[in-house]
Length: 200
Image (tube, rainbow, N blue to C red; front, side):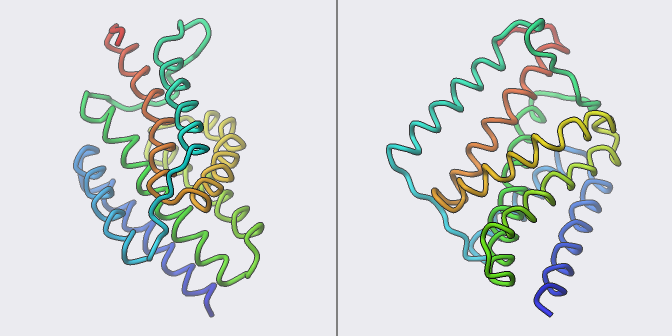
């Protein structure tokens, strides 16, 4: 019965996201998804944050990663896998929306409820990470991403799902959102700069 309830909640969530993305322009849809997901954090009772020296070291690695992604030459990093129009607002809103909505749903809500249902953290994290990688099929359906890119990046996204689950359990939802944003933003910023022939 609990699995059925969880399946209904997930289906309703995905339907809501799909309808928002279809009805509104990308900037407005991203803003609505951010607000909706932030409202879910206290409702779902998610662990907020824990800061310590270990997390700050991890954070510094991701800041260096972001700087490297933005500044390395095009020969080293191929950067245009997305098929969408980008403006200055979207460069910020898309990764922020993805970080907040995906972390709240997959790491916060889904992991928490799967652990309650299955009583096994390992399998719960595997399932939520698989679903996290699978949900990116919407990028193909919406025309934002090529099928080939979806399949190539599936194992990487699954791995990120595992990693962000660890971050959520150890350091809370705010830190998982922050690290997710620090992975997505530099890539989108690089694509934007390449399309507009800008550096920094």
